[in-house]
Every structure is written in C-alpha cells, then in structure tokens.
Image (cartoon, rainbow, N blue to C red; front, side, top):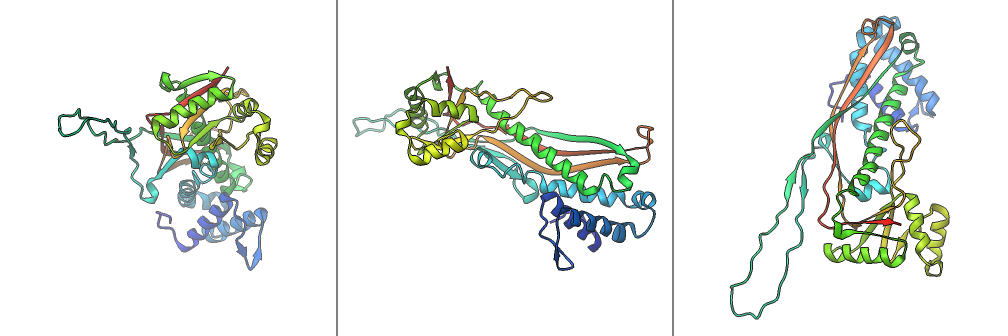
Length: 344
C-alpha cells in the first residue's frame, strides 16, 4: 500500500505504472486484454487526461512533476527486490527483511552447540561453560543511486516515458543488488577457518570436507554452492556409474547433477567485474553450508528519493537531469561451521 496520499486519479497512474514495471499486462482496459504497447499508450493518455489536464506538456509537467516522481519513488520501493528474490539461490542463502513491511532490520546470530561430557556421577563438581545465547546485530546502511540525463524534449514528447524510465531504474538496481549478493560468496573464501579448507580433485576429498562440516555443525543436510564451472568440476570427479538417470538428465541440462550423496547442489550465477567482460567469481571453489543456513543478509529500508531538473539550469544544456537514490543494507553473518573446497 502506498504511503503517499495520492488522489483517485494518481492511484490509477500508480497502479498502471506498477503493472508495467512488473511486466504484468493482464490488466483489462475497457474489457479488452492489453499488451505492453497498449498499456504504455493507455498510461500516457491517462497521464495526459487525469494529471496534465490538457495543458501544454512543459507547463503541465512543471506543475505536476512532484507527484509523478513520488509515484516513481513508490514504484521503486515496491518493485525493488521482487526480481532479486525470485531465484533458488536467494531462497537458499539470503535472509531478507523489509522495513516497509514492518520488519525490524536487526539480525540474530545464533551461538554454537554446547559441549557434552561424561562423568562417573554422584557429584556436582563438573566443568561448566557459558551458554552462548547468540547476539543481535545490525548492518551498516548504504545509499545506492542512479544518475541519468536525457534531452528534455524527448521526455516531454514521451519518447523517454515515465514507465520506461521506472522500468530501467528498478531493473538496474535489482541487477546491482543481485551481483553484490553473488560476490558475497567470494568474500567468504577469505574467512573460512583453516580446519575447514580442503583442496584436491577427488570425490573422497570433497566427501571428507562435507563429513567434517556436517559433524561439527550437527546439520541434518548440507548445501554445496558454486558457479556452474565449479559444479561441472564436481560432476567430473563423480564416477558416471554412480549417476542415477535423473542426475544424468540434470547434468546434460544444467551442467550439475542436482544432488550428490544427499547434499543439495546450488548454482551461484556468474557475474562480471564492474566495467569489464571478466568473470568475477572463482570457478574452482565450492562452499559447504548447513542446509538451513542463510548467511547473506539483505535489508530493504524503503527510503527512495528522487531529484529532477527540467529547466536545464543545473547543467546549462537543456537536458533533463534525474537522480534516484535508495537506502539498503547488505552483509554476511557466517555460521560457526562451514567449509571451502578448492579444486586443484
């Protein structure tokens, strides 16, 4: 629900633009199902009729640009993260909180297991240990932004339209967040305890590390995460005769056998180093985590701000200058026991 006090006409614009941003074209206009082009035209006509009210584009936009950009800010708040969360990787490894939905953006880090010992009995003089009740943590907040410009005339003539601008903004922000989340696993490699790092090229070596992590953490199941390249290497060290038919099909389709020795295999999508065509993630590393562990923490604060200059005064070139900023938090809270396998 929008936090702004939009009028009935403005709510209609907001709903239409939100449908476009989400790629939802199921809306019926005058009882006819519409596609993207129809919905874009309908939105433009609705803005012209209900918001601009027949004034010239420049005058009407100058009077109404604040409400239009409040609409865009709210759309970004709603849609940010929707694409980010729609993947098996995010479901498996990312814990998400959204302050707009009432979540408290603090994270609880559970302590490790207690040590149990045997003794002869009939006395209370035993060694004691402090109960590790865990702790509540907060992550540093950070602003991310997009700052763009275009010719004013293109914006007023709807060549650069509100819905297309919104679509590019939220998809670009979501792509940035996704890449940041994938890169978090690259940071894990530098903090894995030495006792839980293994290397080699054999099924036994990988299996030994899995046994160690599972025993130390008391996990019921494990998840092995790596890029497609890393999971292909894992499939390469497993004897083909051990494959079930479903695993052979999975390997042919995805490069991963899907499951191995009861452990779930999870693909970490590759991403590129900023501004290059160089792959950012290591194709020779597998991360071994407890099956229910979500080490990556992502918090949406719901504070999105926009700034616009349509006068050309800011840059003295008659371009429209638009900046969108949003506040978030992202980080990792690692479990006590996890492993890293490096293919030699």
